[in-house]
Each structure stands twice: as structure tokens, then as C-alpha cells.
Image (cartoon, rainbow, N blue to C red; front, side):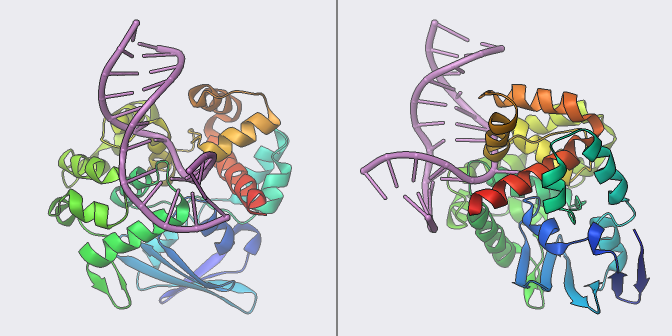
Length: 277
DNA sequence: GCCCAGGGATGCG
DNA sequence: CGCATCCATGGG
């Protein structure tokens, strides 16, 4: 994809491969603010970017342009990915709908915490909890707050996370932080997808689906297919009646292989947006 | 009051 | 193993 970086701005002319609405609302990330159709703010770790439209281009403005160049995975060619997936099927409508989706490369600790909170929860409440955690424990960054360090997260008790609205996941979070040390998440990145998945599942609050989300949105492993309630509904609608999510996952990974993660995002976004109306 | 949300942990056979 | 049940909480 064509883009250029000058000073603190990344300028993207090709909206067919970069649409903030699609990127932020496809369920992979929770810490962003939609000011309006043409204006977003996104928070990642201790970094902030503002996105706005100018002369038919999208501008990503930040003090850390190189961080967000990686975060938005700008060097990847999504036209190629979409063409490959078109060949295989009924994905056409979903790809046309979410044409500007990109899979983000998010901070590992933040992704882990976010998706532990996401279990059997809804997106609005997940967002609210994460903003609360940032505000109470994170370093102040002007108008917003950084995601807290592991040390900060370890310094509070179950009551804090109940106060954050995480419900019964509060005790899972406290156990989780005690299982981690400062660099463990990054150190595991050399593992194969399968070994990394097994390790993630050993963590408190992490099962198969949450592990797949961390693998995809944090570790950039695209050979996984997170199956949640929406994907389950979609699968039953388009393929066959099946209520075992492990089987659904195995079938979809067998079908899409290393492209699974991309296929999943188009389908999740399409199914969920259609269901809103 | 009931059902659902980007499910996981636990116990039981 | 597979399966059932329970788990907080806010919104529709």
C-alpha cells in the first residue's frame, strides 16, 4: 500500500486498503474514540494517534509515527489478501462490506487483558472497563491515559477490577497477573502457533477462543480462527448446524489455513454489523 | 423478568 | 475425554 511519512504524520491515499471505521469496529480493538466518521483517536500501550481525513487522504498523526506504521501493519498488501480469499468462496459479500479492514499489531499485555475481559461480555462494557483501568492505573497522556504497566496491574486487588465492571473476571485477572513477569509475553513469541496457544491457555481467564484472539491481534498469527457467538451463528447459517466451537474452529482453520485470521475478521464484522439492523 | 454479550473454570461421569 | 453448570453485569 502506498503511504508516506513526513514528520509526525502518515498520509494514506488508498482508502480501499485503509478504512478506520472498518479497522476499529471489526472487534479487534477496544481503546479508541470515534469523534465522527472522519475523526478517530486510538490508544495503544502508552501511545496515541489521531486519525482524520484531509483531501481524500487519511492522516495518522502521532508523536510515534513508526510505532503506528507497525501497529497498522502498513507494509502488508491487503489487495493481495482479498484476492486470495475471493477465490475460495462466499466471503465476497463480507470482503466488499469490510474492504478497509486491517489486522492490527497490538501490545501483548493490553491484548491479553482486553480479551480476558471480553469473555461472555459485550463490546460496550469491555470498552468501559478498559478505559476505567487506563484512567485509574495508567500514566496521564494529556487528555487520555496510558495502558498500565504489569507492575501497576499487580499492585491492586480484586476489588479494583470489580469496580472496573469486569464482574467475575476480576479474580481471573488478579491470578493472571501473578502468572506473568515483565517480559514473558515477548519472550514466548518464538514459539510455534500451536505451542504458543497451549501456553496461553495455561493462563488464568484464557481459553481457546481468547488465546486465538491474542495470537491473531497480538502475535500476528493468521493461522487461527477465533470462534465466538457471532462466528458460531454465521457457521450455522452458511455451513452446517454445529454447536461445538472446537469443531467449528478446526473446520474453518482446515478451510482457510494461514489466511484464517483475515477471513475471520471479514466474517465477524459483516455478521455483527448486519445483526445490528 | 428473561436473554444475551468476541467464554472460561470447575466438577462429574 | 465430553458434557453441564455456574459465573457478574448492563442493555435490549
